[in-house]
Length: 219
Image (cartoon, rainbow, N blue to C red; front, side):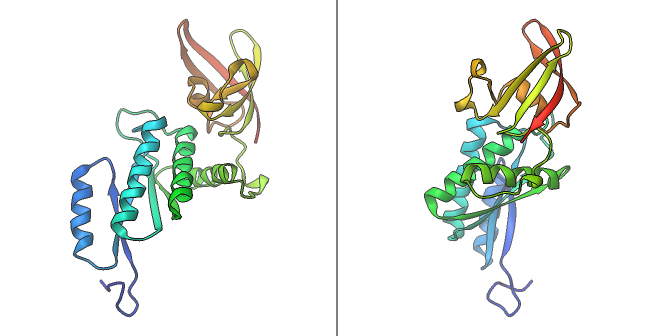
């Protein structure tokens, strides 16, 4: 392969599983011996949630920025969750996006986010909309998917009781159920995030499982 400083050469990135210490160590050894090679962390959805996921992303970015000696970074997100874990949720995508934005603000880095696996294109579009909401950048309304995401206003129905409920899905720190603000980390939000209108989902509750139907989504 051509090196970065050869004619026609381009920098190469080693996509590294950031949950595997051996993979990180091996990647660093390879990159040290190959000028122009960099490391790009890979994060698996479903492995962690909330603050733990955010800490992993920011730690990976800080480590790679220091090792690569570059402010141009790339994070790969594996959409297929690890065996035995929950399915990937929009709340986790929001956590990743928010952690990336925080790192960019603090370090001056420019971070690209790439998805791989099932529904990669759909999740990439959702992440772009979330980034716009975090940074205040303009984003075409028709580019947002008609499914719940962080920031959406939704109407759901308790199928057994026939009661309709309306909530805005917000980050955990802004949640207030009495005021109609549902945490993106709550069981109900996790169940409906990414689902199309008309979908029915089951949510575990102290009194048993509750069936909800997603009636409306306003993004």
